[in-house]
Length: 190
Image (cartoon, rainbow, N blue to C red; front, side):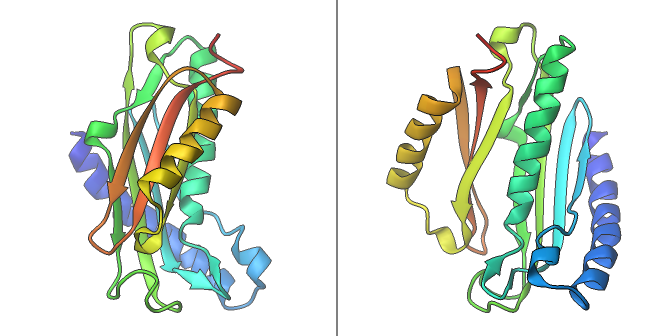
């Protein structure tokens, strides 16, 4: 059932989002484009984010901003759910990060991309199994190294993480690589 929902929702989200962004891109500045809304859908069992449009504009990585928006939205949702005693976490094993473009990502700065993030959310029995923080680190053309990730994760653990965390590296055939980290946020889980 959830796969059928994903197959139905992604094209719908892309269609709605693309119309809004293309309309904006034709007549606004780069700062306004950076605030272009991404299509994000959240329920207790699923988080989907979609962006379709220019990969870069004036050297600004527009497409990758979807990851920032998703991390913020999912993090806020997990915190809100935790406060309501609904304990959730991302099911990284069944998650997908997808990119589609006719070019190698980053090769042609003016090219378009469809970038989708699909994270199933699972309810867990108690707060010690849940997560209330989400962050990401990655780039087009696989520029992030394992060493970079380990240093970043260490900084995250020192500043935001209280207890455990889980991470997953997502790679796409077009050369996108991104680490996602979910963790017990120090302000929510003691």
